[in-house]
Length: 269
Image 1 (cartoon, rainbow, N blue to C red):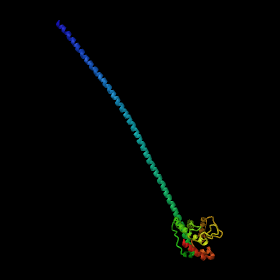
Image 2: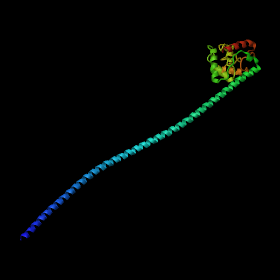
Image 3: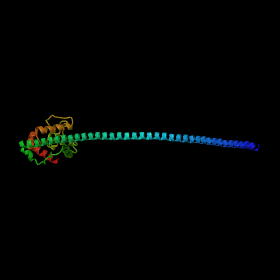
Image 4: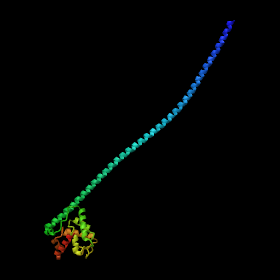
């Protein structure tokens, strides 16, 4: 009887102990589950936040990178265009400058050739007169330098003739006399000196703007017109410069006096 009662107690005790163990295990599992769940939520939240931030930063970085690349490409293209434009403009400018330089040289050469032609013509006129009228070379006048440019010739003789004509009606027309002499190849002193012998440098003209007693009834509308006509007439009808033969042709009645007076005036110029 005693043995039978002992077994049930032992069994009950074992059941209680087993139940307690089961409860502990269950509680542990639940705790572990909750902890795991809690840790999972926290991890997911942290992961989401980091991923979002990282994604936004990456997107922003990518956009900025693309913008920078676009700006760099634009700057490079602009620089290349500018360089190309500069090269193209430089070539164009160089070509224009080369053309202008060639035109300048051609113009200078044309002037030189023309000047030389006038020089040759004047020297030929002088030689022709000396060959037919030896007295033309014995006037005592200084030689006119024809081996210069038209600009230099006109500059020199304009001043000399203007000084000679100062205070007269022909004052200031030195350049007209000088240019006419250059164009016709005659001594630039010839016509101004005759104007003094014939009309006191235009003061006593018997015809309009006729300071040389030229062809009786001849008159002109201006000094420029009459000066050019007279110098051209001297070149065609008398030759390069004054001589006794020319004086006899110009003023036959008193040619020796005319010659002496005109020569003296030429020496003043």
